[in-house]
Amino acid sequence: MRFLYLVFSLILCCQVSCSETSKEIKIGFVEGLSGPFANIGEVALRHLELEVEAVNRRGSLPDGMRITVLPFDNKTNPQEALLAFRSALDVGVDYVFQGNSSSVATALTDAIAKHNRRNPSHPVLFINYAALDPALTNEHCKRSHFRFDADVDMKMAALTEYIAVREDIESVYLINQDYSYGQAVAGAARSMLKRKRPDLSIVGDDLHPIGRVKDFSPYIAKIKSSGAQAIVTGNWGSDLTLLIKSARQMGVDVDFFTFNVGMTGGVSTIGEAGIERVHQITNWHANINELTRNNAALYRNQHPDVFEDAYYGSVRRAVRMLEKAMIESGGADPVSVGSALRNMSLTDDTGLVSMRGDNHQLLQPLFVSKLVRVSPENGLIGVENSGLGFKTVAEIPAEKTRMPTTCQFE
Image (tube, rainbow, N blue to C red; front, side, top):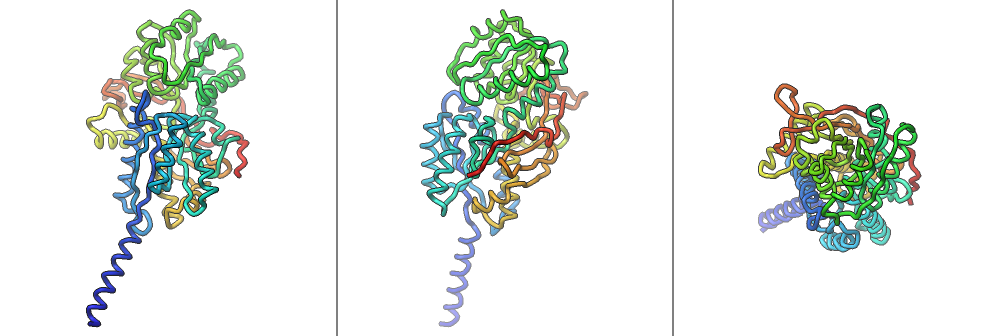
């Protein structure tokens, strides 16, 4: 009888131990998975799942914990995002990942902060991998929000430094989506170009409805008639690919300076017409160094049948820093993990990155790159089977991207 009791006790202990060591960490991916930007959301989801699989495979988290990714469709709409967040809470998510649309990010930032005040026993952290409105780490900052991409002002500062030394460019046209992010891009471009190149003319400044323009030819006609030598745009998704496609069809021979042309469809849409003419400012692209090329190859090997190539370096860094924060804090409690994230540094494939403690904005190197033809001779790798890829023309060290902040955490 004593022997049976001991056996039962050992089985019960093992069951409790297994239960304790198999805690599931739930990440709610609250992103646009339907509508005009569905393809962008699906690409980011594949990036997230790839990085989470790597963490689970390493088995590095305390007590055998594993991460599960649960997708929720917010239709790239702030109101739908709040409904999706409530659904995520119902299944017990610990972390929310989102990035496509700053208006959605603002709504989620408020909702998560309110939830955390009302439910201190089940807090949630917001991991923002791509929403770039500067307000999110300034006047609208929340303690529960962490941004892993550079904001509009940081990117525009780097991009305008490059434009400023291009003496062949004497006039630019601004065209952006009409919401907080697009307005921030236009405002930053106007102020920074005026300061750095007072001789340069801004010959147009258009804002258009986000995700609703199917034909950009009227806008391109205005750009063509203005005589602009360059277009500066923060557009993303179909709003960028359709803009580029229309410019190509109408024979507008200008330089493009973009934030997001490396996203799905951008390169294949513009094709060879963009060689040496299309530029982007990003925190990552495949041809920065051997490590970035290896990570690009890893994504392609994991997803051989998809159209796009690796793009979201910010997702990789977010997951890796979450992993490090969980290891340092000894668990997955969002409060402890958030404390570990503040002022954390990590060496990634582009160099040292660090999270600011005063506004939860990641500092990382930024790269201005241009579209070029790839070949075995230049050692560059292409995207979207186009024979084209990006080559770095300017690098901005992480610390030089630091901006003043007005953030005052609650």
